[in-house]
Image (cartoon, rainbow, N blue to C red; front, side, top):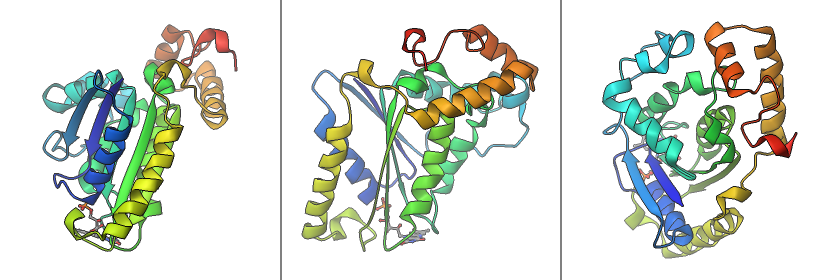
Length: 238
Ligand SMILES: Cc1cc2nc3c(=O)[nH]c(=O)nc-3n(C[C@H](O)[C@H](O)[C@H](O)COP(=O)(O)O)c2cc1C
């Protein structure tokens, strides 16, 4: 299994430690585990030129330097683990900046096929509140990317570092993480998108059949998605 951890901060704080806890529980010796830290691994903001959407993501000014490497890592991963502290009720600016770079991958444009067979876990910690809105910030992107299974976990740790988190709280976190680990599949062949993802796919498919953005329509055509092929496997049908 290939596991990629994307951390919305450089700090190895509570969010990171909980993410690591989950990975240690699911991973086996043979697995490949990689970690990205933001903004170090992708320090640029989206410029809003929309060249990725209208033409090609390879023409993004951040492609060669940062996005090419990160995108390859994301595409090769079976399990994505996103962590972010709550910063003023939302995801960190660094993680939002990375997610902004993937607007072209939304299902309304050119979703990457492998997403429909991936699992993702989004983890956030706050001192007191804002976990729901922060998890939504991440989950919204992953859902529109087409990620097959998305799990979320948010917790108020009443602390600004992992060392400060009380033992009883850490024990409770561990139990809750165990529950998510039980839901994750090591056999990636068994990962299939849920009905909401498939419905969105079919709505987008009908739009692409009519044709909106020629680049997107060509992409859907090439994939065979306007015919019988499906990103989660042709034989599966709906
Ligand atoms: C700039 C900044 C903004 C924050 N905003 C919130 C907030 O809106 N709600 C909250 O409960 N905690 C907030 N916190 C506290 C952190 O979310 C909390 O300490 C979190 O557990 C830190 O995670 P980390 O250890 O992974 O960095 C904020 C902290 C910082 C530095």
